[in-house]
Length: 590
Image 1 (cartoon, helix red, strand yellow):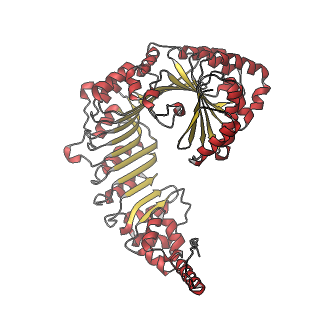
Image 2 (cartoon, helix red, strand yellow):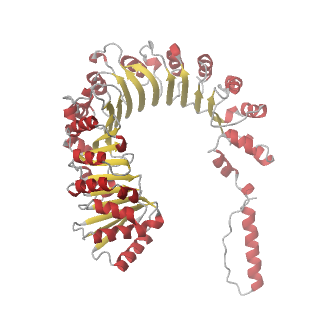
Image 3 (cartoon, rainbow, N blue to C red):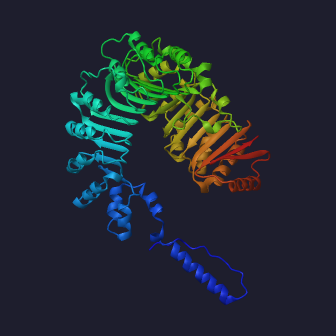
């Protein structure tokens, strides 16, 4: 039996016996109301709402009469999930329970590969009697059985969500869509096909009588641009659209592009083989109220690099666009050459992009280069902790230059590779460098720094200890000479564990003005701050500085402890401490 921990209370009564009696009575009362079986039915329904109804049935149905009544009451709605993750053995009793309470089912989720027999027995009963059914999720159901199921759902007034996953669908995809589009009340639709042999997708343009109520539509299978337009003619109420593997077959006349999506605000698109001019012509037809556009380009067409063409498209056709994300890749193979399209990359540093806070980034992993335009988001590290105290990120993100993330730096040992990298880096001004895994200093790292002479911000995630660094004496001497003349003034480091680690970093960057140490355990806030300030004082660094320590969870009482330590050790005389959530900022003049 579970009991809530009791809170001690003191009663100020003159009579000791009355005091004892009152306390005893109160304790008894608390025990009574805090037994779990005395929770209100509504509380159990709220808890069960977060669980797979299969688990609820197995755990509670045979526990006692009260729970049996709860699970058959009209107030309890079922969420049936039979998938690989369920690990459930479904017996006849539970199937009978589902069938007898199907008018209380909110959602069905079936994975045919694991529960084929249950689907065969239960699916004929998913029909107009399931009056509360809102959502269906089916995986790998054979086409014929799926079409039978869809035909049974036409009259359900609350069915608003449908997700269908296939291994393969061959030439029946059009039939599936036509059956789905007959579900009059559907709002959310997701279709995923793992293996789709692209053949003619002969879905005709919709008539007004065939318009659906779908507002959120996501599909993952191959379509040509022409076929996409036919498909979207059925969904004029769309607000969110996510489509993958759009490719070009034949030629489409730009004048033939007709878009009937006057409510669309979010569009996510993956392009496989469409010329950039055809793609932009298609995008220009999107409604002017579009607020978010995400594009992933999977082809070798370098004309997609053209910053001015993207700017012109957005200025002329998308006045309300708030978020723009574009991603494309290429390989730094032996045949890599800089083209005229590459030379337009520097245009992404123009005021148009900076004012929108849509930042151009380059990520390099071995021989693959990924280019991205992204809004400021946490998924990309962009030295946010170095922003001004006033929180005016707009002025900070107008800082010129490009952010480059470099993976697998220790595996770069080909001279010709660095020649190709140099060609790429010379196209634009790289001022921010992120190295997610940095081990012992190597000549390759020094070579990278020399290729990027304008880097002022550096982020390192250490994968080696300071002792391993110091053992590589020749490489360390080379690195020190390089950094002595570098422009690096803002440094972020992850995985600092000891005072020696801190000393190493502070010693390497003599021109540092802003230092950030991240992912520091709470109990090391004071020691990490002390080590850092002591080394800065020891090195007699003369520039005004700020130090930021990022811990797991910050509280205001830790500010007082920092003040106490700094004053006791006489590390600083004129300084301020500011806390933003889990980040502690110390600003001072050396």
